[in-house]
Length: 386
Figure (cartoon, rainbow, N blue to C red):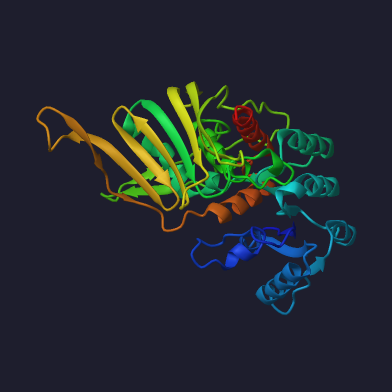
């Protein structure tokens, strides 16, 4: 029996919506358009964007991809799209952060079966709550694109934690050259604490237990060790209940190491959380660190246990375990283990597959709106200490 197709449209054909799909260095698909087109269960039939050049480039590419029978439509506004296309199951909102609230509300009011919203949810939790209220009113589930929840390398970490004993500390660090925070950038969200910090906080909360209580379906990765044995890294799913508790896992931070430049813009900070109750037990300390004056980009997480440590970041994953020291008699040292990582993490395609599985009734949303609102609350608690 042939499975049905789901009809989709995208609002926003810029960088994350479309053009990152041509970045030769990135694992593809790397944009919403390319991920939607890659999934055989989805038919991408329309787009809206006020930027005429972006929209025309999108139209040409999609029509060429779909072939002669393509009837893809384009519109200068989402209002015109919704007035003319009445069969949408999925609407993806991939506009700039300052337009998230307006465009997500419009998409929800259309009442598709699912809205996919690019992260972060909105400029702040107050706006995010308006989105949630509208989603509840209209009965429309919202998935937020926190891509690392679907990446096989990050998911592999869950199965390795048992190997490193009891967790002593967890550190998440993000280094870049983008300003971390300045009050004047609140209006458009062009600061790293919101733009990149939402990814860091989200994957920390997800790995440690926020929103990971049920069984996963299509995003189950396998990590092979050096002896070629396979470890099932199944990590649970999250419920799509729009009224669920969104209390953050990370609360009441002690913020230190704040560095501001000559214009008063925050460029460095460390947020420390004590006695974090995770699904792995109580963790004495969790630290979130960000730099906005580095001449490089780095995203990494280190989990230190009593028997070893795990380090994972963009493009790498390491496992270090306790072994008899080669340097000192009667001592044990950490030795790097050989790990064979998946060739592709499936971070974007996994997100879209979860959407299909959800619409099929076979899976719950892995990255629901409520968890993303929780992330915003964590960021706002940090920001209040600057």
